[in-house]
Image (cartoon, rainbow, N blue to C red; front, side):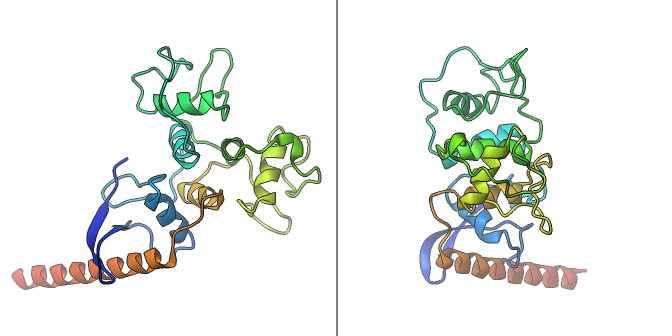
Length: 232
């Protein structure tokens, strides 16, 4: 995707890079995480000033986030594609090969060997990407289930357990505590989980810069609207 970047004197500091997504309000609970991921070039939006927070994250896009979040190499990749549905000409090929080489994924099918790059990634599958990206050992995961919908018999159990133990997810619901492992991962959810992996979050100053830039753009919009009305 493309990134919308505004370079301006924000808060009295020239040259501050500010990401402004017109579909993410200043009061959105996921704002800090979304801006943090954009600031780190991990999730930079889809172009035209949009982030599409409620769209699903595809497996191909998830591969990109994992490579960027965990600093995986895109160099010295094989010349022959590993997955039949991800040829070397595919937009996400390098990213998918990288996470495969790093052991973050084995794909979505063994015979034939497929990755399903355009399919949505489930919350359980994304837990695997993140857990393996952080180098956590499934064998060391807490054995007492945290979530009522992820019993110890679930194939994704250790990965999801690690995410909760590390404070990366709070699940999808309470009373009882649930994770919704089979639900698709939404872009805002991915941003929030990525933001809680080791590496820190966006500074308060950057959040203030965002709010100021958003106010400037809103004022410009209102002024343009007023001028257009006068021309009618």
